[in-house]
Length: 103
Image 1 (cartoon, rainbow, N blue to C red):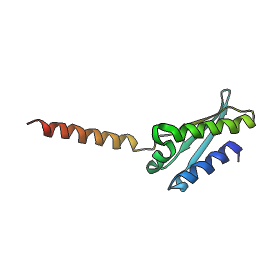
Image 2 (image 1 turned 120 degrees about the vertical axis):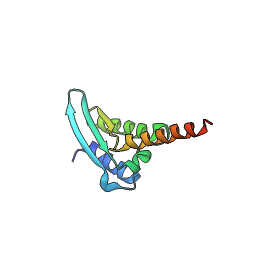
Image 3 (image 1 turned 60 degrees about the vertical axis):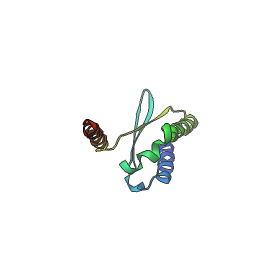
Image 4 (image 1 turned 45 degrees about the vertical axis):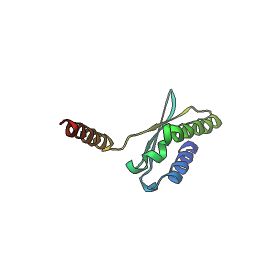
């Protein structure tokens, strides 16, 4: 296992409640290394953090790991399936509340 993947896996699994759902895919191209992270929908907030600070910190640390291996490492966090549906239902609830206020 590559060091960057191993590092990311250890950090993320320590943060989340569902470590068995953590999946990391590594691709290498002319731009460098891209690590794609999939986590359980319930754990997205823990991985991203307030205002994205946790995700930013993980990205900075991954760049340091990459520098030690002469590689540019980037992180993409995939949005879990069903996340958009949840936001859509919240919007419907909001719209319904506005309709209810119209007397």
